[in-house]
Image (cartoon, helix red, strand yellow):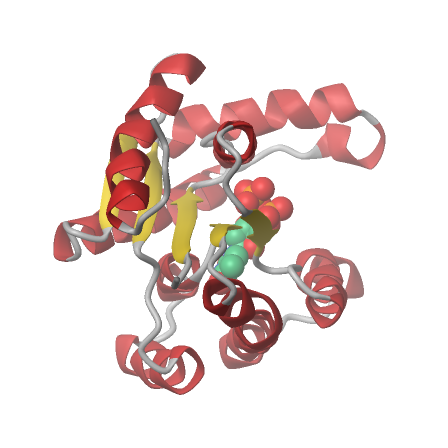
Length: 221
Ligand code: TYD
């Protein structure tokens, strides 16, 4: 039996982690074989790359967009080879926090050409696509406020994090790119309004996940 590949996407602060946790717990309670992972950072190599990618601003050097892009794809290549493809071959339900659509949205919004993304995607993914992508959609103005509140609560170095107008504008472009992806792939992408109460968002996700699992032969009732 072939597994099922589900990704969850959205701007920062859209509630991906909470919903991924809830979905994985739900599936485990039903006795399904679940693997939870994320990008960047789903492998040992990926964790090194994640550290580089997310702490890069400390180095003071501006990275060229292709260098950054290739690091995200290096993370993805290793993740596909050692986690995603083996999980699918082993009949698991694999849930991944961010995947290809994040690259399309974020690196696309940073100015990487569509044709470059197409070529790398073909090289690394070799046609593999998620069976379902849950897109948690939210206005970045609201979601980034959530992130600021969370950072303030964490204290220390995070307490200083504030998003300025240029960053807000970047995240608006990211959101719009996610929305275009959803429009272009209506069968794969489930667009879920993320401002609704957490329980309601969870239900909206389940309404899309359950039929997919049933059709793949998993008992979810
Ligand atoms: P992360 O801490 O996982 O953010 P979040 O909790 O919001 O998911 O950080 C991942 C960051 O990397 C996030 O800003 C999105 C970005 N990213 C890309 O720019 N390109 C990609 O291909 C991926 C997977 C993530």
